[in-house]
Length: 399
Image (spheres, rainbow, N blue to C red):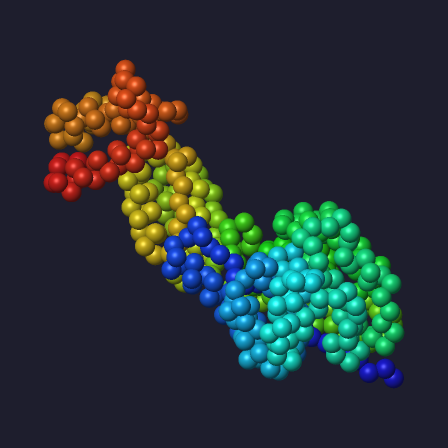
């Protein structure tokens, strides 16, 4: 009777070690770079949790081909510290293979014996009865499917066939950046028990035996807000290759969460609802990077509340990218209301009235009636109006 064969491994990709975060505060950028190294330890912890002895990295271990030697060594040192794991690294479009490539430099560093660089398209046995078919990239873009060779790959002694590739599967809305086509039918034609893909930074299932793991540590607002790896368990109990029973389990590994929200704001109740939504992200505030795009219209008192919320949120989270240019001032001020806001000061009342009119305008308005001295956008006028009223209150005015 054939003994059941089980093989577990971790599927990850797109570490982008050495990625720069030039648009962010330098201190935050440093923390984000360090998180991309720390996630290697968290991946090792997931492997231990599932009893896996192998980690397959489906491309873009490094972010660029010309990194400093220190940056090259850092992930190698982390992986070497987890000697019970075999780390298989596939060249992707950011770190292509070939003579003079970044991988030639890595080879010269003599990485630890538990680190395997899969820079040749040849079958390799990574465990008894388990064949790995890697598809390393040697160019950032190609019209040729790098997985095509897998169809004819001979693995007579293997009961399990696992593909490892980096590119875009056509017909599945892949939002990756790599101009490398991968045939969605490769799993069936190459008799693969699993095809581990990289390039798309968000986790995505292409089919039961074909997944993008996504990046384990997010690096932008465009993809999944959280980082993951996939714990894969294969169980072979006989029959042809490509028929093993499979279990795919996503595991969260990201330290930081990058959240993107677009909301329509019409009242203070909407502001409170927005705050509840931010809280529901379920992360410690100092691990949140948030991009907010707001639209709508608010009365002046609610607009002030929105600006107070912005200041509070900015102090709580790791990074806030806030855009409320689409929020207009709603309603109209009658003369009595303006007089009350200005405390009877006629000149101040005139300024408030003018700013309110400009803040409600759908287009640019001249800074002074009948003057071409300058152009003020509604959002600038709105900000000035809110700040003016705050100053009036701070000065002890009746507003």
